[in-house]
Image (cartoon, rainbow, N blue to C red):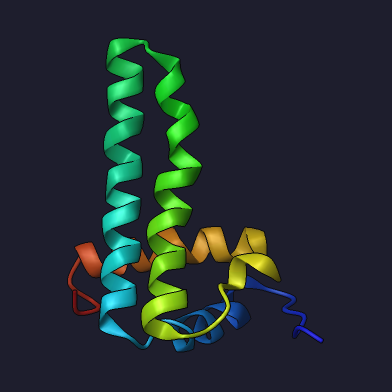
Length: 101
């Protein structure tokens, strides 16, 4: 039975524990960065079909990291909203230098 988290503040330490593997974290950051780039391209070009690629890019990189490097099940399956929020907090912490890339 998955653990219930009342607040994101309680979930995030669990999330970080699921991302100990550096390659997994790197794949998350790469995927999230590509999501931002594709979003910008879609807005600038007004080719909205690019938006269809966002889930594939974002989750694809992350899930490869989990299944092949971290060897665990993505938190997306049990905590989808907190997991998505965790992806962006992790991305920001890596980009800002708080967590090693």
